Length: 272
Image (cartoon, rainbow, N blue to C red):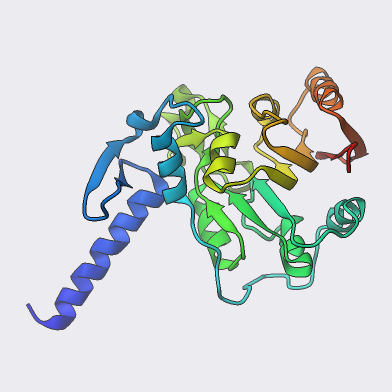
């Protein structure tokens, strides 16, 4: 076999491995201490692990995609979500902050964390499990880490069916997934697993937009373990009673409601 054919074969093999690792379709190679030794796990092996489980932490760290060093590649350069200025003003135009953007979509459209990166040198984690959204997100060359798996609605990891439906991507029932060609199985990891994997104990801004699972995720957070100064929580799919539950919960945790939009609640903690 000549050199060019060998190079093509190796390239195809590498691309196939990356595809499996990122999207978790069948097998997940989990690196152990020695790089030459690779343990192959099935998704079910990662289901039900506690948030501080060492194997789950190692898996989460391996799934993190490094920030881009290239120039931003945006479809609408210079356009910012109007909520961005409102939030950063409440944080006194804080520089070098850290965010967790859960439900990052394509990393640009309606994003409040993009201008935080560009204008105030913030960095953070962009959580986006939907494969098509993830591809678009990578193309934007964001300067923050990307995590292409979902956030768990419990304090354990969960094996879920996930609908890849662009802005409406979400966790769905396994029964519905069997008849939907855009559904896939993936692992969701808890909030504190993600925070610990990054060594984070303070989050300046947390955006939570997961198409209906917001309250369940909020209940998994120990606000004494990780402090969060400001939050943007999607409420669009909630009933009146569910919205009241979020408002009560956030008040109990010491947050002040700054603004209510058609889609979101915006909060800042009273200590800020």
